[in-house]
Length: 282
Image (cartoon, rainbow, N blue to C red; front, side):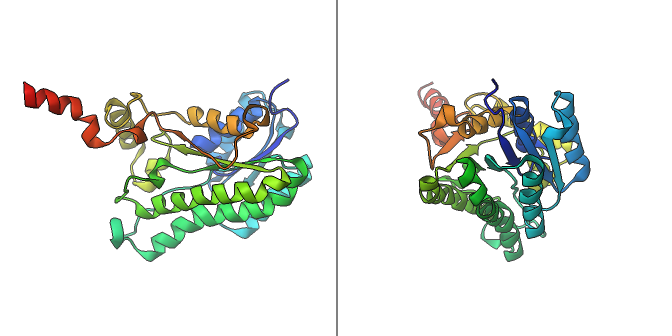
């Protein structure tokens, strides 16, 4: 029997990237899934991928809308319960770095950028968790939040509010895990490094060609990613599935699992250490 047979999962931000890959993986392993995103056309692509993977149409629930809006959050809970009868898994994947309208970085970024960043990356997670909590308590379910190695400890001057938001999310994951443990709800998080998704088109304003070039360059630089390549969305989806699978990860709560190909293990000076020694003693 597939590991998610008879399970029901809500996956936010599932119109592309990690969320899309997670929806396909979960459904392929037996789950009924609610997919959601702001872009109806891209969400339809996710649905087509599910159908192409031979997922029955009655195992798919689609909600188009902005996850920061309470009406959309309520629709996610309501339609999932109406169609599937319960909620077993909540994957809080929706998130993005919001570009400053004037292109500012660091401490000069606008407060409107700060508020929008926190509304999407933190507040929507808190609100979805609150709304799903009673239903997850009934099913003894799982919550998996999607963070980022941008949370630190390294500084992120280019997009500080996103990093601060993800650091807040990590603390929330720990807090929620302890708070919800008595209800037998497990809460964990995945912290990806560079993943070849549409994220850079949003946070950095890159077109598809430049985005692809950026990921290829990062993957080729061992001082950036020791593993030697950028992850695909499927790589992160597999980690999410591990944390959502109680049979595989029952004793893990409140943890943020880093999946970054080694990026967070090295510092720039350390990465160049061997070359520096060669240069000095040549």
